[in-house]
Amino acid sequence: MLQVKMTEAFKMSFLDAPVPEIGEDEVLIRMKRVGVCGSDIQIYHGRHKYMTFPVVQGHEGAGVVERVGGKVAGFKAGDKVTVQPQVFCGACAPCRSGHYNVCQNLKVYGVHTGGMLAEYFAAPAAKVLRLPDAMSLDEGSLVEPAAVATGAIRRCGDLAGANVVVLGAGTIGNLVAQVARASGARKVAITDINPRRLDIARACGIPACVDTRGRKLKDVILEQFGEDEADVIIDCAGVKAIFNEAVAAARCSSKLVVVANYKEPVEVELPLFQRREVDMLGIMMYLRQDFERAIDLMTRKAIDTAPLISDHFDIRRMEDVYPYIDDNPDSVMKVVIDIGD
Image (tube, rainbow, N blue to C red):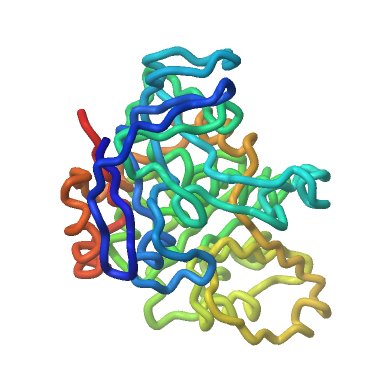
């Protein structure tokens, strides 16, 4: 089978690898679509702190069941599926308390261990989720990022009637805003300095899409929500200056939620959290229930993922993918790799 392996920064190999053997509790998947994530781009540039080369990338996948192990129930050949890409120990304190997304020994397919960028992928049945027949494979490849969004909103608590502002209108920010809207928020606003991303947010039905070039976040929040301001600020931008604006703009007794993947420490004015009783929540990936909710919302068309896909590339053109993304940062949202028909 064809498999693409990153051997070092900026270099990859196209391998003729054996089709994986599966155990009694595993599912063999013929991969069809794999999404390219921001962490994949970091790996390509050699800037990901928590991985080592070589690695087969791919953690946003959709495919079709090829065969199942003898002890697997609930799946059959031909089923459309996606994979929850976390490998956790089950023994550490977070795992024992149900927080395996922050397992002390956490690994992720395509980052710390072999991923889905191949014609076939074997996974434990417990990590496989069936997709509805009506869901396209393109949509299936967006379930994982949608699960990041449902996980983030789950951590926020009940949003019914809340004012929510999302910072950053990339793929994750867009999905977080959509899930907030689907979760009963009174009003959802999303901000960015990229007009293209804001246009896509509008196409996805996000009510208030605000270009913040030359504007203070506090002013935007007052404009959008009035004197009640924002109950929840969700940072999907990952920019130090924007985070500090969010800290300054947070209303007393509100929440500041960090979804963005910061690579460096951020200095903050801690007394602002204390004196205003602002809750800061960290977000790390998802639980299985977040995948299930993402699939449900997508199936019911409560969130729209189609406008997020910028481009498709055949797996045999993987060497063109990252240079293309690097050369088109303002227009690319989500690139999807096609594997077979």
